[in-house]
Image (tube, rainbow, N blue to C red):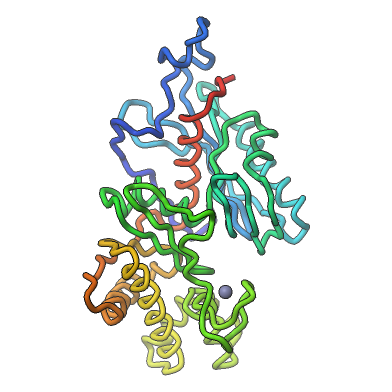
Length: 358
Ligand SMILES: [Zn+2]
């Protein structure tokens, strides 16, 4: 965890009948072959990785020491993704991050699985990264690569959907079977949660940030005028630079754009208001199709608090007529949502795996 990033403790979550809980080491299912269960008496743990374009957040996470206790982060590391050195280097960095944590497992713990949250277009069912532009990964069967290298069950998912899964199970979406988690940061994407399950749409569901009017700023997706190019946190800063000639050094991000808007800078106000209006339109579009009662807002932009949430709520309402407006809720897991999501994916993989602990 880098300086300045918030440290979020695992919320205490009661999971009496959670399918994500792995069989207890002493349970009959893990000793069903008539021998003593491997790892009996050891605390089960997983290795969770949130792979980003710049760095990999990784954590060794153990089950709570009594039923109902929250998971416990035992070791946490942030290492470079090495994307500039090519796709082989970044895959090697992922494997090295797993092995580094495995080497640090304290006595009394046993790693049962790995969870990966990865960016780009991701087919969770196939375990394949279809396209992650920042990492130059194309059709990469990463789940199998990590499973082969580790011999462990591997949970695998898209970073925003993993974050949404974590918010759904542990955070702001708890108790809301139907909702969306919209992450507004470098890009704009949503995790759509229906009946408690994240709907992935073969990897393309919730990609709200792309597709737009013709003739606007060109976007890495191949389109132009995509909402992501000006309504994401990164897009706001970039728009402001273009309109004012300021540099990324002077105005690093959306927080500075907002600060300038509040200080009376008309261009900053216009950039901020236009972005919030477009976000409202995107949320309203989802609500028109899915009639979601709750939308969780996450990603870096949510740090703006009421400066975002109040006008966003008004914008969403302005784009709806017959549909009830959703309740907008700020995410609670912060920048650790991806790591929490990877943890949830790992436990789910452990629970459904046939592999015996070794
Ligand atoms: Zn685009």
